[in-house]
Image (cartoon, rainbow, N blue to C red; front, side):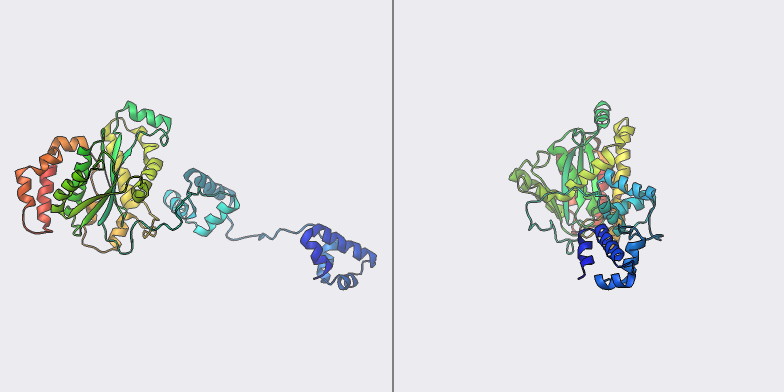
Length: 379
């Protein structure tokens, strides 16, 4: 390695100044200077005629270079949404109809030092919640409730508006692990009467739309479900066994086992509860807005979780080519108080003689049985 190259590693401008000094000592003989230093004549002329500092290596007229406004748009949306490159690519396509490669977005974010907020995990050997490849649709569901009136997640004006307009305070949510299809109802109170009724209506809706496999539902130990009581759980499962369904609870404190529904709650805060309640002056308008958001989630929103590959929940269901009716995504968003006024509690439904006669019909997967029961419940 020549002296010039050793000096250049330390400081390029001093290395070129060194060439100019040697050139001057040799009466500006380019060939002799190049031979002495062991470099090319072009390098000597570059030091003699050019700048001491290196030129920029950026392309003079790059064909794929984005203008500053486009770059600023990507940076602004990245700061607002806190999305990574993959989710931001889908977000830009859905919101602005802009198609940008994921690699380009990642380059812009890294160059401007925009990083995603990293979530620290203490279990490095954690496994997936389910075997998503082998999982069948609607065989594993997660059900949980969300306290909407949360000061830590809502803007102050939205929090105040929900309180003043007496909008529903609790959301009962269910999500399918395979397709990410969601179901939702609301109430003003949190209790097991509404929780059990919601689970029953979800199971009834699934059976009505030709879900034939056994349904397993995961819930936490909250008071709106079973309060950790094994007796309540076994009695409820005895009733659900007539529908080939089962509810099971997670261990206390293991909220990570409800990761799908908890993540959905976070997205609800970001995309719905943080702004849309301001346009609702009563609970009927609120239910209508929530129905629109649920339709967007099930039909239009792209998902990038395990096994989703950027599909919407409806697209995922259709890609599986099952006998399940795609209209299953059209679950009505209702207020549980209104449902109970119409059909009574789950205890009233179970002890209804007409309902008993329908449930005791022969045939494990007779869809007519569930249609009759559904019409009886929602008449």
